[in-house]
Image (cartoon, rainbow over all chains, first blue to last red; front, top):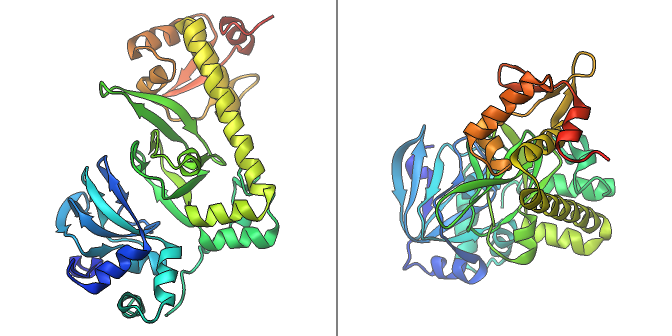
Amino acid sequence: MNIYTARVTVGVDSPIYQEILQLVERHVLPGRCSLFYEGQIPFVAFMVLDGTVKLLKRQKERGSLVPGDIFGIVEYFHRTSSRYEVIAAPGAELAVIDRSALQLILNQSELKASNFFHTVLSKK
Amino acid sequence: MSTPLKPEALGCESCSSRGQGIFCDLHPEKLHDVSEHKILNTYKKGQTLFVQGNPAFGIFCVKKGNIKLTKTGADGKESIVKIAKAGNVLGHRSLFSHTPYSATATAIEDVEVCFIEKKFINELMLQGPEVSMRVIQQLSSSLGAAEDRLASMSQKNVRERLAELLLVLKESHGVKVAGDKISLEIKLTREEMASLIGTAPETLIRLISEMKDEGILEQTGKTLIILNHEALIDQAGLGY
């Protein structure tokens, strides 16, 4: 998995982005933190809404995520290890895609977000 | 949808800290459900599980190793408020009070920790009293320890607080070695120990040195060994 597959991009103008926002919790993180470390299974997946979120490998920065990027979703769903550490800078706003939110989206087949996640998650 | 969120290979049923945790009274069927929902991760020494001020997404159950909880004051100074060990739960106060984490949790050695999402834990607590009662027990125990620490900080001098800390560590991490010697099997730096009793590292080092001279302690590498338990009780002001 390279940086381009470590995240999936929805785009802030997409109806999928809006659908996801309707069904998940959103949080602003006041402190800098590692959301998960390289080699760990993410305990939830996130979609970037605002602020700075960076991908690191062996403690070196390998890229930044932008609003509309979803990360950790494939690893979270398949319970596999992340190949990147993900660090959120203070003030980053994230939508939290946990198990119940994901199942809620997947079960609503009329949603574009449902089809989107079914497609993303079928590719391991 | 392809294979749904698969459970960890190692279930809660065989967890080494199960008897000390909040799920130990659960019916096997429900325990299996917990296994399916948990995510087991390893954190290396120095890695943080969560950061003070950030929102709580669930609870962390310590399976193996020790974790320090630190609070950072307005002046940026960090003080240790608790050392969590196997069987302890972290993040539950923030989760149930719907407030951000009040402390930062950092691994002080390589640790294994299970994460359980907040919706699942809330549902589990609504289904029966087993988990709720255990959570109340842990909250009560933490509150008691916090009250003891508050009293100790205001009523005891540094030497008494150090003796008390050594007795607490003896109970939580003490391993009997030769004769009556008790080795404190916890990897705390002198700075971390000093923070726990609210003093400077230099003072702590001096007091440890004095206790070694008095035959109360000895040291092997970085590990402290208690030689005279009664003297510690006396110095902590706990004797009658």
